[in-house]
Image (tube, rainbow, N blue to C red; front, top):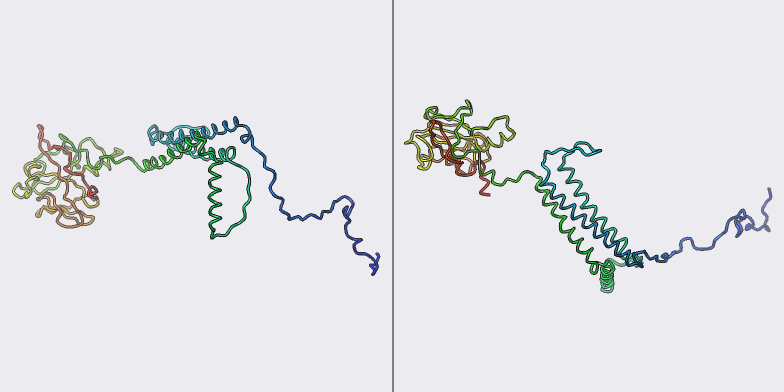
Length: 352
């Protein structure tokens, strides 16, 4: 091993400009120098008007497909029932409504995004520009610069002169929010006027809940409380709970001289009167009857009604009297309804 003396040059041990082993090339350039922007390359659409027109039609077509997807989404609510099941390969058995809603909504969203991306990549300006970082508190010169950039961008986008794209895009963006409105329809069936009507109608016989037989005047003693329901409904019915919750009937027989309300007497038969069994507070079934006072009590919140005076509220949070059902006797001697209740049964939703 040789020693390094005072006359030996240390640079002899450094790589030469041809590399340490003669194969490399040393560089003296700054490795962190700004390379600048590469030369701008024009797209086909920039130099070929026919290609630009083709891209414009593609973008417009995607927006039209989005509109068709939105219309298909809306039509799915009308065409497919909630319980319809179909087989879709390779997914299997699925709900026809859910599948169609998901597919059409995906088409509507995807085509809006794809159309916007294709528009930006093929028709809008793609020339890169550089700008210095500016202060947060922009001065007037910077604000004017930003405004000019926005004007330039709007002009280069072609929104004003490409009417086909503009009109189809506005159509797609206008139709798509309608899907949100129709989604609200999926919260449940429309109430329509179902809450204001029950199964009771003119001529329907009052059926004893306990015996399932028609009620006759002689079956009801003075001071007794009997419960009735419309004919034709069974506990096995899918909508039994819904229907009985509106049509449940409470029948009492009073001495005619004990009835204080004239209309109540006119709507009854020989002291027999029929009222809704559903409390007008929160819809609890009423079943507690005080024979001597003719009062009925709701067990949930103690609302008390006077059945001798139009079922008016005597105590508690209920806000309305119990609706009365007008009754009479048919040719067979059975008690029958002469129509529906005089007002909606249950909680007083109509006041709110």
